[in-house]
Length: 264
Image (cartoon, rainbow, N blue to C red):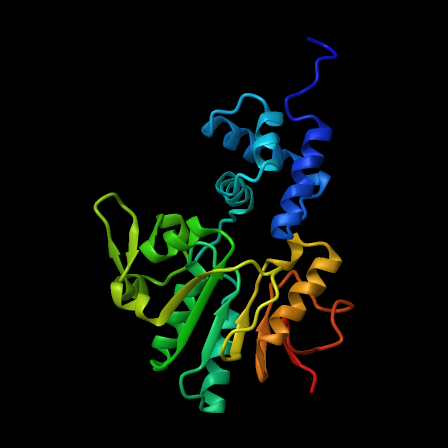
């Protein structure tokens, strides 16, 4: 009926938007309301809610499992293997030039693992076999997906056929599974980039690509500070091709396109 309030009215969307930003740092602008409505509607349906206010009430009383599930549902992004592959070549060459022994690499928003396994394969193909990748994400479900290592053919479309044969098994249902030995090069960690934290050792390379675009400027600056605090003095920070640290950090110095190190 005309005049009846939509279950996901502007006011309700704003409440969810604020909650998502508070918990994950991700700001979903009004121009992306269609995505927010779609993902929230599906989450409501799958969890048996007919009224979004009932979900908001559950979240308000501290249902952390429900909150984490909603954040996971809203923030999951899709990617593919060997995305922005020139960064992988920069990584490989820099390790070789510096002669690093067991470089430490952090993929700070690992999602379902395509980026992580792309890095591992790139280094192995270059004859670099002594390294470790720490893969973190706020979303526990995508980390489990990464550990399983099973991917739809669309996700591996950029993998050359010889590498697909060498590093993947073709499953009976038509998907591709990374070979088990690749998993020995990574450690998975659930981590919120908004939290203040220090790893035991600083990283030689940090990948945080196509993540900053989802944050507002103060959150971007906070995340960048966290990343630089965990980067070695001669290390590289890789961000997405559509991103920049210009006007965001006075600690950053551009090395290559969307690759930075710390000003010393």
